Image (cartoon, rainbow, N blue to C red; front, side, top):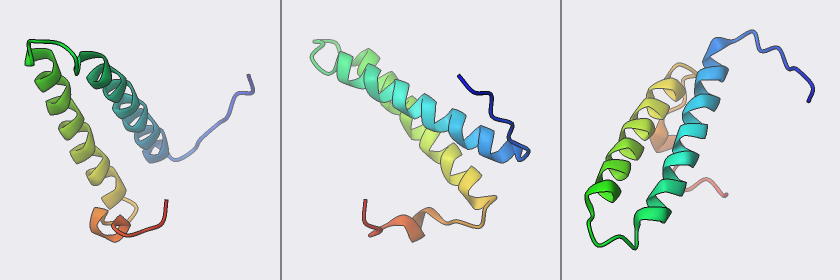
Amino acid sequence: MKKIEIADKRIIKLVNVLQQIEEVDRMIELHKADESKSMLNQYQYRRERFLAKLGELLGEFKVKPSELMGVAA
């Protein structure tokens, strides 16, 4: 794999948070069928926290989460 050098540490933080959201989403799917919702609730809480962090990081790029609403996927 080619090593990519990224000078702006904010981009690295953004990518890390996106990866954490991706992993938490996998865990949420895994625990959806569990009788006990304890683990599911914990992962949903973590997801909310990661989304809040993502919003903070986007703010450093002068991007507001509300600006992303309605943007075509």
